[in-house]
Length: 66
Image (cartoon, rainbow, N blue to C red; front, side):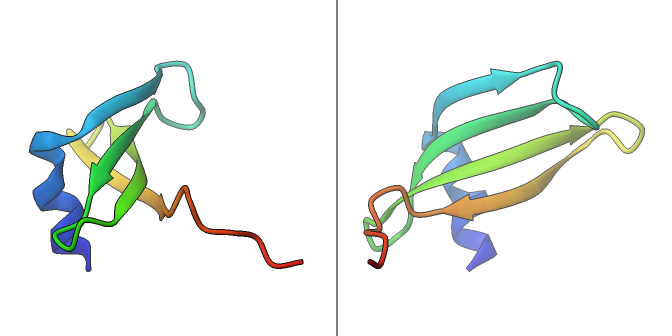
C-alpha cells in the first residue's frame, strides 16, 4: 500500500542521488514495509509543483523465474 511507502520515508536509507536524471532529479531509498519486507523506492522531484512523486517500488530480493 502507498501509505506504507510514504510512512517509511522517515526511516529510509539513501542509496543513490541522481540530480541530473531526466526529466527530473531522483533519489533511490531503501525502506522497510510495516510487515518487515525490504523494498527499494525511487522518488522524483517535480520542481514546478515543489513535490516529490513516487516513481516505482520494487522488492530487491525477489528471485527471477527461470
